[in-house]
Image (spheres, helix red, strand yellow):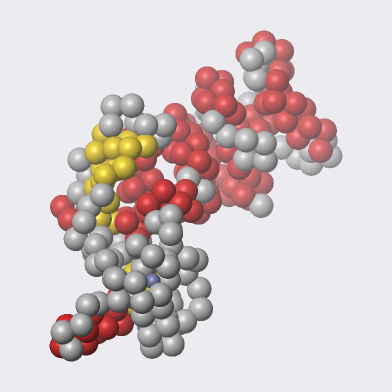
Length: 268
Ligand SMILES: [Zn+2]
Ligand SMILES: [Zn+2]
């Protein structure tokens, strides 16, 4: 179990105010339990749709104080049982205190429905289709702002597949950058079984697919024709992407083991 309150030495990402509410996620077929801050994971639209389905998009000003709703400056909350409107946490705390002084029931400042202060709750959600190891990598990145060190190519590729699934493009960029660094360090491209994972777990236009093509094109000149001929029978999309990239590159020099040049080619 991963509990955000007992992770020593982990910085929280940037200066996002994570709030007080935690959520419990059972990940994968084995239902591995993770406990984490709901506000942090809901940076991802995938998790926001599941965990905060009623919440409106965070934009504009707080309806109480008319200052900007900026989660990097002030903790936010929202009307979770009715209108989904967003507020500063501090403004709602003041609003609740005023209502209590007047011995009034607390109502949402926007819709006037009873305010449900559920910050102490820790709801549990099952997500059996996500990979628990890849989710652990994603969670470390969310809290620490960087990936765990020394991940293998397979772990990085699985993490990227999850990152695309949950719509986390910054995470995916970090993963691809680490994957290129790993390949250059090891002097080897990902095994074709990993290419298979990358292609079956992503869709056309994926940055991970592009990384596979660029790595094979630049780093495996000796194996390139073998891949096209034999090992790649089950990956027609990969073969096609390789040939198309090769045609586009015909007048350009192969960049070889230049990590910065490889990253520029993939991430541009
Ligand atoms: Zn406010
Ligand atoms: Zn409301």
